[in-house]
Amino acid sequence: MRSVRVMLAAATIVAAAGSAHAQAPPMSPFEVAVACAPPPTLDTPTGKLLRVIGGQDVVARTEFGSGDMLTINGGTDAGVQLGQVYFVRRANRFGTYGASAGHQGARTGGWVRIVAVNESTAVAAFEHVCGPVAANDYLEPFVAPVVPPGVERDEAPGEPDFNSMGQVVVGNEDRNSMAAGEFALVDRGSQHGVAPGTRLALFRSLGVSGMPLAPVGEAVVITVGPTMSLTRITRARDAIRGGDLVAPRK
Image (cartoon, rainbow, N blue to C red; front, side, top):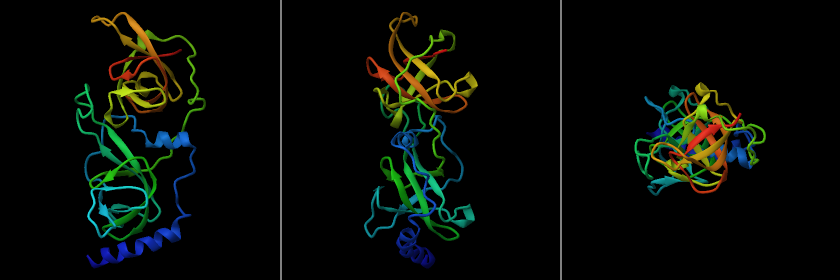
């Protein structure tokens, strides 16, 4: 316990000395927005994870943000090293925001840099805050997003491939309604031939049999997992909803 207290007391000194060292690479505002978006999966990590266990403050708090120091439940024995950068994420609660009960996935609270560490505990400082961070949020190694060229443009090249249709699953923070400029997960990934930069036409079924289809917008794939992709909605005639259909343009 004494070594942990000493480490916490020294963390602000270490942070000040290392603030220009081992930071996440510079990113454009759009790259930051992508890094703050959910990963392209509904799965969340299992097993023994690095987690936030509190803050460096004399007052007990439930949420943390910019300027706060976080205490982490692992140290060098868990492979944590000074200067490492981690995403801080939180599993969504099932069915929190609407029609898509059963969705999970994660939201990104930000990313942090390790500024002090001993064998069993570490202290981290925020590099960027995307949203609230709380005790028990988990850490994953930070990977800077690779953004395909042209994804900020509203384009609709080619014809929709109605033989490869999928669905909009959910938006950021488990939301079931999204607007132009926001992110959404779709149930098509690399196993379906989808790649970063793929353009998607968005449709809504107007009948019980799935037909007819009404166009409601356009999207572009940003990052890809095996069975899901993170997309950015580039055009919307109405709010884009979970269950709307997607067709890749070819």
